[in-house]
Length: 264
Image 1 (cartoon, rainbow, N blue to C red):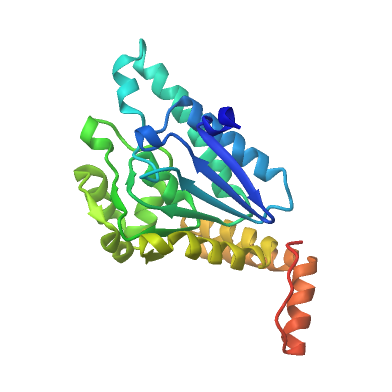
Image 2 (cartoon, one colour):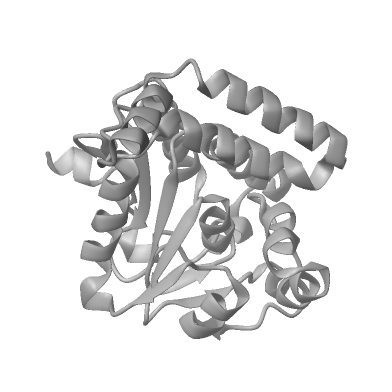
């Protein structure tokens, strides 16, 4: 058990809810090679498990994630190779997180910086404790964003604001993150766990196949013309009519009762 607690990423499952815990609390969960690889491995495990219907990503200790392990950049014999060894599995993890049909929720507290903010942006939902503090951080060390920030950020806040956040790398609080649409909700720190679990349980009882189609449609919409998007909507709706959840949803609507979705 002690050995497992020292792993940089912990995967825990509670029924249909899987929790990925970043587990380097002594360095505010700074992202290193082992954590990036562990994050990708955890998401691969979740992808293979149909019974998992919701993903929570959270950080152990005082922060969600303070960004990359900058200290290791200075000591690496070949810093470019070292950085690439972190970024490649991190990008595989973010890609998988975005493409999975299962909704994901970021549980944010303390520092949410650099790669931590990138990871939070890649999640479908984000709830923040009122003590959370945000910065994109990369330009402070003369670097550019990774982990999808340059893709998600302008889509959420707009082009001009995205440039401000990325270039100036200012620190801002949870209230500003909520105003900008970076988080869905701010919660008192002592209530964050309960609010996250309530949202996860709501999503876990929802129509998982429909969630996956909705995610895919929204993500592609920025790069599609109207006619192509309409065709994608048509095909998605048709495909969903073959699911048990669709049949149950229609029946529940007609019978004026709550639907009992099974995620298939």
